[in-house]
Length: 87
Image (cartoon, rainbow, N blue to C red):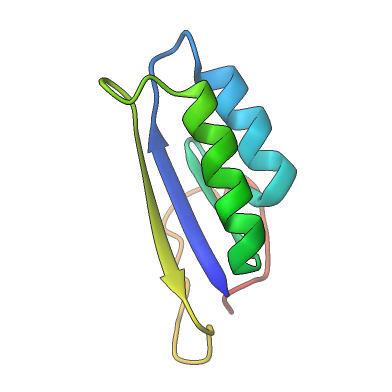
């Protein structure tokens, strides 16, 4: 499946969250990642993030898509990390 993951994490933990997300997904821009990932691997990522985060003040949102056939990616301004997942 294709996922878009965004997070809002306290600056004390943001470096660890960034490093963990980069192990599984492609960094797109500040606090935003995307990529193809299996359901099992996504569950592993979520479990690992839960160990890093303070769930009383941090948040992660994951958008799941079964495919990207009917999607379009539009960028306005500078593209921080050029990728070609959703063309």
